Length: 151
Image (cartoon, rainbow, N blue to C red):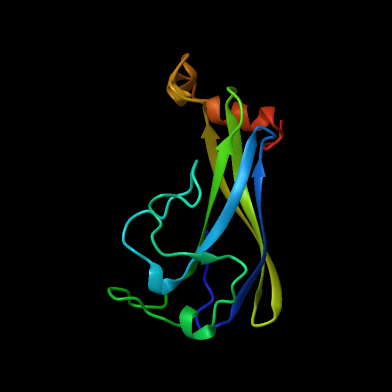
């Protein structure tokens, strides 16, 4: 989830995960342009996600000089990325269907909804067991079960 406002001061006011009742939102972190590394930032069942090396608290003001930074190997300023973590409670599959971010850009309030469907299943089988992943409707069915998709 990227906040792309080159040269602007950004202040994240609120981050909310859209989850099923059996998924616990653990929090979010901001990855500033100077902290970007190649590869996936990751979002997943740990917090902060293990692939993230440099990160900041989401409520920390991100200065304009940071959002104007052009990282090595880039042709333009990089966005500020938001990564989040969650935990599955129980043995039933759980779901995440997005992240809502409320933030200010140079004092102007913005609200973004980033849709990302994630299904979490309990170990040891995870989502691979019991023919679940053979069902092409598995992801949508889990999201619908928890009211995260229209019926």
